[in-house]
Amino acid sequence: MKTPPIHRHLLRQITKYLPPDFIAQSPEMEDFIAIINQTYINYDKDAELFEQSAKLNDREYTAINLRIKQELEKKQFFQEKLFEAIKQLSDNESALANDDDDLLGLLTILTEEIELKKQYQTQLVEAKSHAESANEAKSDFLSLMSHELRTPLNAIIGLTYIMEQENTLESLQENLSTLKHSAHNLFLLINDILDFNKIEAGKIELEKISFNFKDLVLQIAKSFEVRANENLNQLEVLIDDNFLPNLISDPLRISQILNNLVSNALKFTSNGKVQIKISQESFVNKVSTFKVEVIDTGIGIEKENFKKIFQKFSQADSKISRKYGGTGLGLIITQRLLHLMSSDIAFVSEVGKGSTFYFSLSLPILSHSQTIDTHAIQEGYEEINLSGLKVLLVEDNLINSKIAQKIMQKWDVEVDFAENGLVAIEKFNSNKYHIILMDLSMPVMDGYEATTEIRKTDKLIPIIALSASASFGYLDRALQIGINEYIIKPFNPKELNMKLQKYSDFL
Image (cartoon, rainbow, N blue to C red; front, top):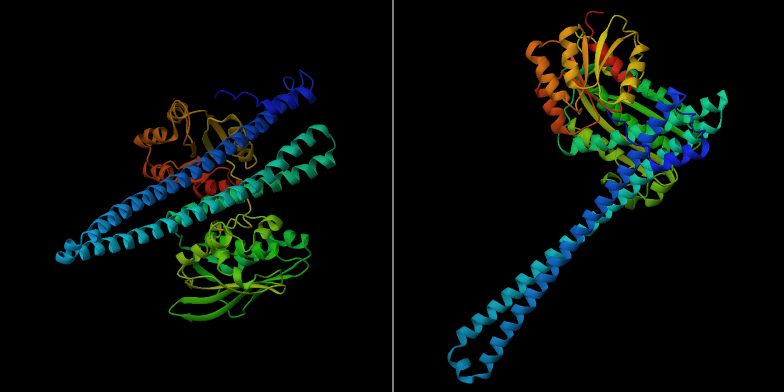
């Protein structure tokens, strides 16, 4: 794959701060510069997308205004013609006396036309108002997204510059920790947007997996301990002694619901307490009904903002967005996921005293003959050694392939590399692999064509797609041609380890 040229801003920094031959003499520095260069290029692409979106909104607003102007001109034309006709008839006394029906008919037409035009004008005004509100919401969301994306990007770019200047082990560890935190925030932000898009398109399908709900809650609480301590908060888990924890549902989506609620509670609470409370309500016909509450002693929500917090891209107050951050998607995603589970979210809140968000679930209880699939839970999952596993990695991006190879080598996985689908087919025909990791978008031959060719001779080898595209059409097509499942980039190494272990029956 052809290496993209160095971004002008990055080139200026390199020329200013590094010796002429410093990069050429260090392959590691070349790889590092390539990663930073890709960040600059991606930043320019994001800016271009925001500009195009703004232009689109302007065109929509202009089109609505033009329609209103044309309808007003049309209305004025008809009114003038009708009034001229009435005036001519009223001047002719004999016509008025002998042909009252025509005059009354004309007056009726005039009245009806005026009423119709008024209604149409009202509809246009309402449409314009809705369009302006939508345009304002889009603009606010784009502005908010710009802020949320630029904040971690600024940390990443700034820290890479600092790391170039500093050369101590202590500063390196601190900077790497901050970089990891910023990258993780970007990852969560993108996941929120993609999940919302999936829910809006009706593409979310719930799993039916056995899991321990109590363990899941404890794992989530443990993952938030550090964040709770940052704001001097206590995080408690209260579980009913009668609670039946072994259930069947979608632990990943339930984790997402709880993560959103606990994250919000901790975000809006300082030097206080956040509780996760589970109460058993009933157990009938092997179905457990229980209540989940997330209680905080935070800032609370004003009554006039109760409905607003469940609107798309909204938070209770614009000041909240500026002070606490966030996309405003967390609660709407939580609400939509609960709807898929035949439930809903409710809350009570008082300004200055805190909020309680709660919901009830009715889930099948786990029978004694069934086993708990702990692999379905990513929280707390510990990576396992995969020694003996041979993987063919099909990836055209050199940096991405190196990263994936290094990650898998930590698990003692033997990794072979193919830079496009054509090379992948050649290597597949001449070597033995246990699993194929297939990028979908590649030059020469993409992952779809390569998978189709491989499936002609081998129906069983697991093929896992590694794709940066979350488009439903692309992913559905991948599953239809024989790909077993997919992992969206940027991927979580734990998820990759989990998927590789899932298809490693020979180990």
